[in-house]
Amino acid sequence: MAEKAVSPEARAADTATELSVTVGQLMRRLRAESPEGALTPTQRSVMGRLDRDGPATTAALARAEHVRPQSMRLTLGALEEQGMVTRAPHPTDGRQVVFSLTPDGRNGVTSVRHAKQTWLAEAIANALDPREQRTLTEAVALLKRLAES
Image 1 (cartoon, rainbow, N blue to C red):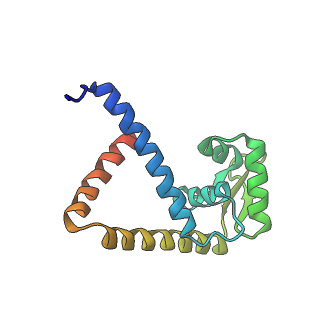
Image 2: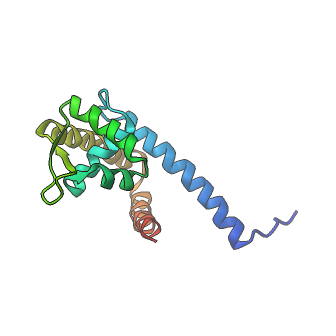
C-alpha cells in the first residue's frame, strides 16, 4: 500500500508540534535538574534577565516577561524579601526605581545555570553517539535561526 503524500505545510505543522512538545519536556527536565529553592519559574526568569541584561525598572521587566506591571511588582517584592534583588533610585527619573541582583541573587543564578549545563552536557555525552552529537550541534544553529526570526 502506497503512503499518502504529505504537503510541506502539513509536515512543517507536525514538526512544529513535535518541536514544541520536546522543547517543553527538555525545559521541564532542566528545571528538575537545577537547585530551585523557593523560587517560582517567574522569579527565576526575572533573575536570569537581570543577570543577562543588567538593572531594569519594573515596567521594563514586565514588558520583557509579558506580564502586567502589578504582577511584576509582586515578583520583585518577593525577590527583594528573599535578598535576591535590591532597588535603587532611577538615575534620571525620580518616580521610578531600578532593580538589580544582589550578590546572593547572582550566586543563585550562577549555581542554577551551572547545574543545568552540567546535566545537559553529561546527557549529550552519554546518550548520543558522536554522529548524533554533530547533528545536534547543527540543529542548535537552526533553532537559533528560528528563535531570531
